[in-house]
Image (tube, rainbow, N blue to C red; front, side, top):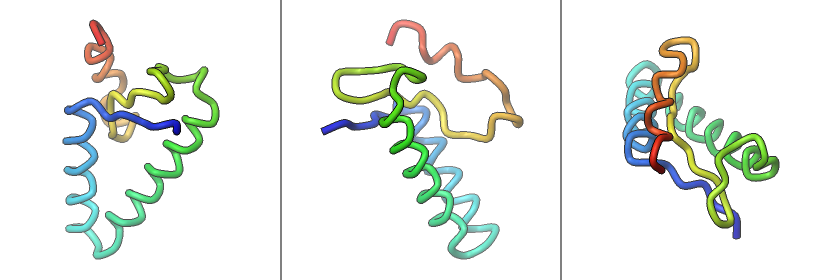
Length: 79
């Protein structure tokens, strides 16, 4: 079974974003969660565009790319 593994920092960012969106509007965090799940499925379907690991991929960040472009690059070193 293919899986996506979130590094610790990415998991923390994901949970913080869910909390932020739920605070902004009830149910919005659920919509964000669903969007991340759908993106993860697409990434697992086309893994050559992502860092592969065993039978899945590694997720290094969970944030809007235009807010902090490429801030996560250092997380990929040594992993």
